[in-house]
Image (tube, rainbow, N blue to C red; front, side, top):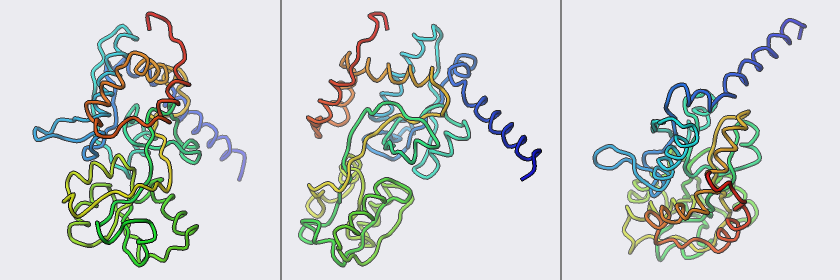
Length: 283
């Protein structure tokens, strides 16, 4: 590679980082924040019958916008942007959203291309299957299992199959978690692998006399807000917001509203107590 090409690459990288490193400046100038939300991911975020967003993550997004308005001393408008499991990272990298709030799990590999807040929710990767046919993990032998592609669930499932030597018949890769509902109803898959919280939302669309969620986890999912890299001021505000939300009790009010039938894990409570650092009284 010649010197000119090297200089051009360095210049392009510099421009890229300069462009994405001013999230708070963009928000202040535009008077808006674009928050990525999925539209069919109960209980985190979904569209209601009036095509409006609702859910645990959406309520947090509204509270976040209110607190950001106070912080910037300017009214900031929330712009919900529909994202998908497959395009959420692209939306961040292309600066089409300023932050994503939902069920994206922190991982070392993902940290190499985007930035994350501190963890704000834990879930487990588990299996939803047919009652009477799948009672434990060994019953997955010779079964067809669905999983959403390009997710940490996929990674955990492949590792579990390899480590346990369970001989499944086939893995079916889906684009979105809730695609599994029709696949299960039509017997195209025998089981579906995802986060327990998401599986609980899926179960609401199925016959609970025919399907259930296995108790044994095959992996753990630490959820965090996702944003662009090189935005330390914005990331600091995000992390402070999460701590404030916990210390003020707002987090648990929203949790109770949307996830009341899934008690807060004692491990999550312990984690929250550890990360709850002191904030200024007027924060």
